[in-house]
Image 1 (cartoon, rainbow, N blue to C red):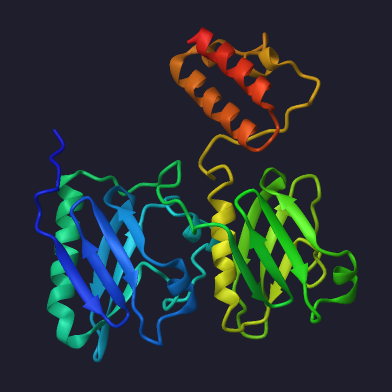
Image 2 (image 1 turned 135 degrees about the horizontal axis):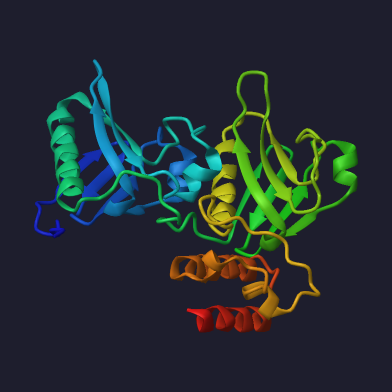
Length: 306
């Protein structure tokens, strides 16, 4: 039987870089107010991280300072999903710089988190849904050759005087979440520019970000990492990568055909298969492929088969 960890003593570490508090079932991560704390972490603000989103914790000592790290379960956080491990250490909200006189506190913090993970028997494997909500919306970021604004339903891309002429001539772009197949953020590295790119359904392109009207090109300036917040907020509203793939459904197909086609193999009639189908229908509805009425009828058809 799983034992709750609510009676474990609370652990806390306060540094210029930020304050981390372990409260048994969750961790509260607050960025510091020091001038060296990154813009991304300041804009992201305080995070409430559920214990079951964690895969582990560690502390690395250095001569002058150490680093406290939290490792999340794969797929738990839309920010980490959208940035693909490309965040700099200073921008990573799950890392904390620790001064040498607080090494003992950091080690105690890690021990408490590890003990809680063991006691609550939290698995370290990947998850099939986001366990964090992503950055709050609405949000707007100006960097590189444009401004990206997201209200939770639409992304708006507007261009500035530095935008390539042909790209700017196309005017501002408005992308509905249901039309976005994927989002990717990449920082500028060396002489290679970075970008925030939206892959749009039925409109594949191999154009570089400089010419792609669905991309903001980034040049390695201070505000570039903030575009990762836009990427994460959109990612949080896309189907989870571990979920069943969503296929486009022709408009002429009837809801009953969507839910339970006559040619479906017998294995699709078992309970697990029907649960998977319900998830797929929910994703189709969220993506705008199914109307409210179609979704309701299709869902009822699946439930009747259960």
